Amino acid sequence: MDGDRRMPAVAAAAAAASTASVLDDDDLLREILLRLGFPTCLVRAALVSKRWLLHASDPAFLRRFRERNPPRLLDFCLGFSGRYRFVPFPPQPPELAAPIRRATSSCAAAFARRILPIKHCRNGRLIIEFFNKGRFDYSLAPLLAGEAAAVLPTTPLPHLDWDTTQDRFVEMFLPEDGGRNGITLLYLWAVRRKVYAELYVLGSGGWGVPATAAEIELSFDADFLEILPPIHGKVFVVTDSRYALGLDLAAASFFTLEFPVGVRHNYNLSCAEDSGLYLVSADGFQLSVWLHPMSGDGNGAGWLLVDTFCVREAEACARLVRDRWIPPGNYLDVAAVGDNAEFVFLDHTASGTLFYVHLRSRVVEKVHQRVPEKCYEPPQIALSPTVMIWPPIFPAREVGHDQEE
Image (cartoon, rainbow, N blue to C red; front, side):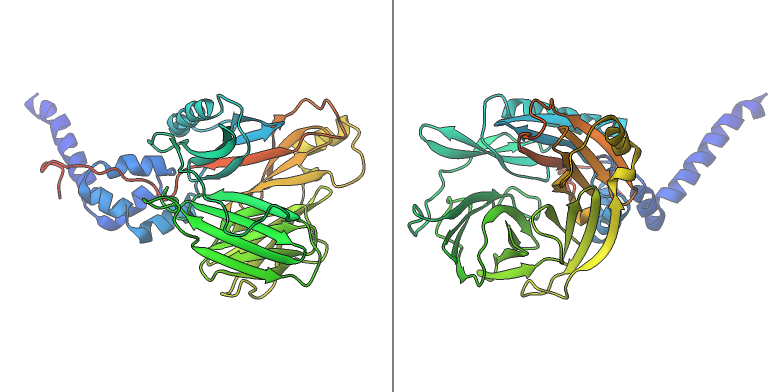
């Protein structure tokens, strides 16, 4: 009888010893952490001990973790007709319930009043523009990080007079490293074929003097359509020609980038690893994905077609084609593209349908439906995907001696 009673204790001790032998092996521990799946789970694991935190926050380990577990798309902010709303991405695993609730609450507070366009969304933060006492002001709204919303300091005016310019833009971008320090303000304007830019960086003392001032005279006529957020330190201006105008922020110099034949304005760009650039374009229901390795001067080795996909062949889109009359023309607008061209949002303007396409898995989902009050003149949408924060923010922790190595 005594032997029977000792069996559970012996088994428990053996199991504890076996677990300790695994968790004391740094290589095995890293492999276990690698399979947690989500950055939020990795942050919780890092709270176990300083040793676990050391492994979880190691840059080499984080690169492996991101390759295996790319930051998950949580939701997106959708705006049209001057109004914005938060749209949760369907359905999500239970591990992401907490960050989604946080983003929902933050968006409800940020969009409680009528605002002007979202200027930029990156790493769980939004910069939004609003009209206040006769001028435009900007605020920083955290969606996922545990921070308070803040109104940014009053923006300076450009040094040169731009009241008579034909094209002019004021854009504001969050830093590429994912932090909140180093927000940039960009003024860009054109006088005929001559283009000017001034860039300010927000620091502890305010906006300061222009950090970048550049100009170029173009050899072609082009209208500016929009300015895309910085990709590897370069800003790209979408035009109605076969060329994009690029601005190298560090070198304070402009350059032009020619697009593949047939690509004009229905496209979007995203960053690729190793300083490359992805371009996703739509022609009807046909998507094309191009990769452009970038060199220091912004030109690189040219475009390489890496993927093509007909969205119309997917069942979610095929049902729409069967059930509705679709007029001829460019059916799908490229609304947004994820990093490394992992996903793309496509707006079917004729029906007011928004599609999400995961390019690697060929999954196509209908994620939103606008009421098509005017079938041929749908409102222009603005879309800002919200992706999990990367790199993870590991909180400081005092670990007791019983948990230490």
